[in-house]
Length: 119
Image 1 (cartoon, rainbow, N blue to C red):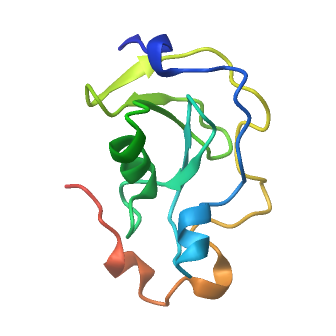
Image 2: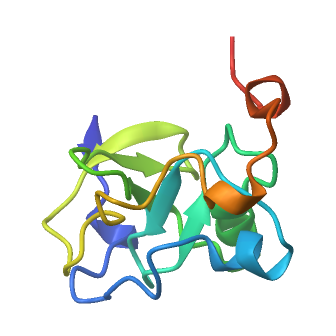
Image 3: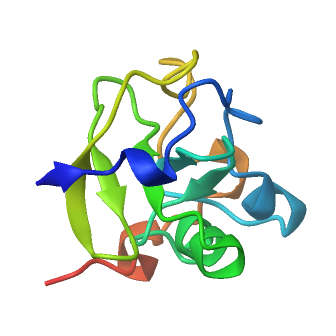
């Protein structure tokens, strides 16, 4: 694990507590990830749309942090590895009462079959 502070702004607050890209497309997500540089919230690589990775590819903001309750790990897309990072501005996760996958009203019954799980 390396130091990922080059792609991190600890003062950048999250822009939402949901994946706004999924929301705009009437989509759904499995887990949420937070851009450690600008606070964009995107869905994880196992989610159908992979908006966190798309954000990296579109902006070259390399480092994300999990935006799931109880998780604080960082991932560097540019180097495809976990990195260390500082404490980020609050909130550091989606609310505990916000479901995952979500949003509940758009998660299909066969959602497990639709995930992009890595083997």
